[in-house]
Image 1 (cartoon, helix red, strand yellow):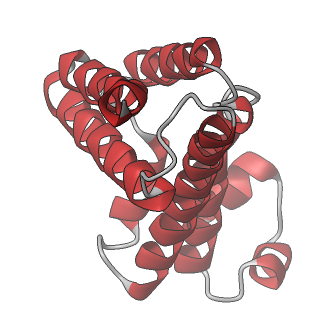
Image 2 (tube, one colour):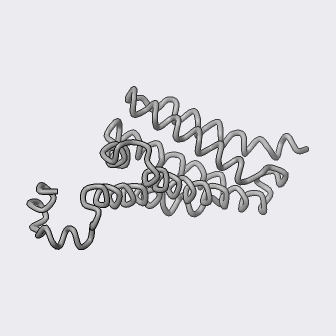
Length: 169
């Protein structure tokens, strides 16, 4: 907290006014901010998954973001400082993953409405699977520095969605 006060020219009373729980409240605010950035940096592509070209542009943006980030994940760092898995970190992670999954599902539903994805697919479940693959790929990228698994997870998830219409016939 001393470092934060020094770098921001903030008094102790000001800091504790905004973060009454001290360090944990501050780290939780940082984690929430970083979680929002994960979604914000995927825009406008993530919010516009209305064609296969749009899905490819979103895919390319996600891969580029995580390649540039490498093993330095600000969200992971903030969560680790909070002590790993706590109710607060589960809440932040749940909020992030929920927002991300809802936007993916909205894109899937849009594509179902336009005939690009089979209507019988469960949009929420498909979005959950795609998101799980992305998160696994990101974890491997953070561990190894390579994006091969992340790219494969997204590419195969999108290919599965595209193939659903061909399977339907």
